[in-house]
Image 1: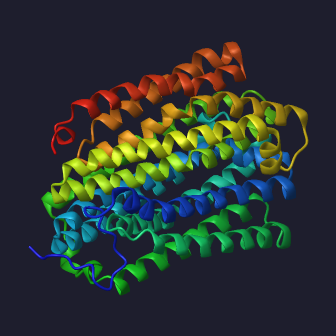
Image 2: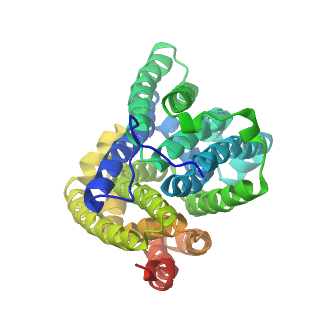
Length: 451
């Protein structure tokens, strides 16, 4: 087995040294990278709303959760693929890392092409299922089809970034995102305001920016790290590696897509409540993405931290890392709850660029209620990523399945009866149910009982 050497590299070995220092050193670049990824989406929302009007914004918002479903599956798969890489890095097996990277390229490319073609072929049926109204249909279809066509670029960046983070390099993916985010905003303004391309311009800007960030990421990987310089033989599918990648990748992908699928179910009901409600919820969800980004960052950190330490056989560090992550999440929840109670109307107005009373009041109501329950979703994100990192790919999927079922029930039963209040109470109720199997499995998992 080849042993790793961290000399002259930007890798971060999370199996040694101070746990808080190591986790923060890893998490801060991931946090900034997540912030810039959200900047993509917020730039689209703000520019589309202010330049093209609320109708165009509603068109984008009506399909955003559907595109997030597909993108979420790709991103989840990429994150899952990185977990075995983290284990091999923790164990010092460079040959195993190269084999994993080669098999990731083959498996990930095949799956991404499948979902791209499937979505393009069944585009109209998907939009019909989403209850897209005739006045929003053309813009919604144009935007969604371009985003779907760019799924390969989305996977390429997230796979590359995930592999780099698996070996502790969370700085390089951040730098690529900063550049591509600024480029995205510039192209948004140029395509929409300058070339008058409408919602298609926003979609093209997002895809082009993702293509550039993906290319930069993979070129950097190959040039900077010898352990990623694969030979064509590394791309030949190997049963053991493929099985490990498929288990981790599809589990994480299903976890992410089930979450998004439940959100899609809610959106189908929201799309029947009128344009103002659609715009308000779109803005509130954008704010929610910002508010919850710390949870996803801590989750990603825990997945890599747990994976590396599992590979190194240092089980006691996993428990200590989990304890530190809990403290960070609690502090963030308190801060966000205060922000939501005080500033929600201004946040909704800033995202949408509107002063319509119903939009501001509806979006504010959603944020003020749901942020009070964020501590539950903080535990959900943290625990399910940690469990994925130590090889439990089943429990997180069970938890996400509960979320899907709960949101479908609220969409079909409670929303028609209680209107938007059914949407507001859907997530806190579902969170309380889905956290249960995660907590139970964390308390009983054999790895977490070892020292």
